[in-house]
Amino acid sequence: MDKNKDIFMMNRQEIQRYQVIRKVLDREISQQEASEVLRLSDRQIRRIVRRVRVEGESGVVHRLRGREGNRSIKVSLKQKILKIYRSCYEGFGPTLASEKLSERDGLKVCDETLRLWLIKEALWQSKKRRVRKSLSWRERKRNLGEMVQMDGSHHAWLEGRGPKLVLMGYIDDATGAFYGKFYGYEGTMPAMDSLKGYIRQHGIPKSIYLDHHSTYKTNKKYAYREWPFRDKQELTQFGRACQQLGIELIYANSPQAKGRVERIFETLQDRLTKELRLAGIATCREANKVLGRYLNSFNDKFQVAAKRTGDLHRPADKRISLEEILSVQTQHTLRNDRTVLHKNQWYQVLSRTRAQDVTVYDYLNGRMAIKHGNSRLDYKTIEGPVIRVKPKIFKASNHDRYVPSKDSYWRIGFKLPNSLRTN
Image (cartoon, rainbow, N blue to C red; front, side):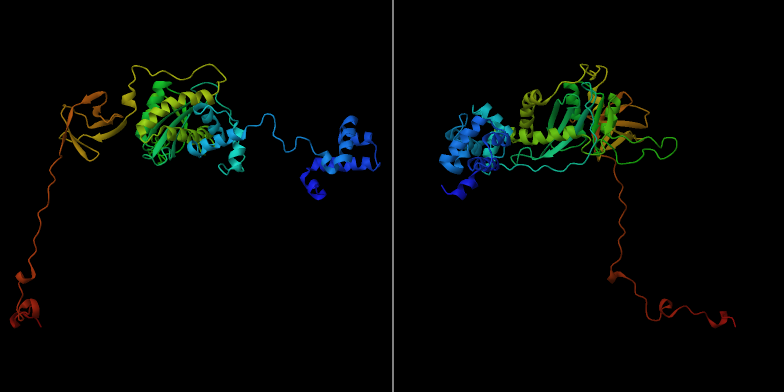
């Protein structure tokens, strides 16, 4: 073996060891001094010296260099795992892919080992760590239901197999337990329907932590500009419903402030998207069915125990109608003929009432009701009042116009007779 090539194959520690052993062979230092420099025993130094005398520089190289370890994975198993990954789990992260290989295929491999395989085969690229801003850390809440973080995640959940969906998610700040449901958009109705599902499953939370989306917070500065009501802020439909339920709304000033729900969305965008792909889901209804089953195992894996055992969720009182509260309520003026215009549609109120204002309820199931206070009013759909059209004024055409003669007063001007003129 060439000397330069042999030295090139040795690492820094082996090169240092060879230089010290070379001094021992040249009798510049003793074996005891070499053991103190290399921090090895006298017996190990004597062994290395004997090997260097026979083999040269390669005598300091470890005997296991280039040999497979006793616990190494067989090449056939490695190729089988990579083949399954290319066919079924392309785009999966190493951690998620190792879990799916164990669950679905019965092949156990460490996620870090799989990560190295995928990087070497150019099937996965290691992420670069971003330089994060210095932010103050906030401690988790102590009780379950003390605060729930809420947000909507816009993502290609079906990866082009179906319509675009939005995941409305709720995560408990104390335990990290997640609840969510898919919708076609992020708005008032999806927000109310998802909150209704959360309340039925867990109860009414003490507070909700959310962003400044127009669904949750109005863009108007004040609802009333006159004193003394100027400091009262106008509520959205969702804000009004939460106020009636006794839920405090806390608005985050940055995405990092509600980072718990942002991070769990990032995890679900990786894991849940792959789960929907494996199931071949293409509709919102099927996606919600898979999500309901998936969240049980997901929460068992990622949620933690709260610091206190108390649950601050309040059960929904039977005297409170969630259907009434979680609805879009719009106030309208009742005309003298007892008609109401709502969403470009006219309604005739059949019940006799002296009310001047009525409230139209648009429920989550698509039904509608007109009420005055707690009294429900009967109504029917009508075409609306007849709009009077102004009669058209027909102008005479050019050939019907009267054209004065050349000597008419209109052309030459009116001249007074001489007897009426004044000097």
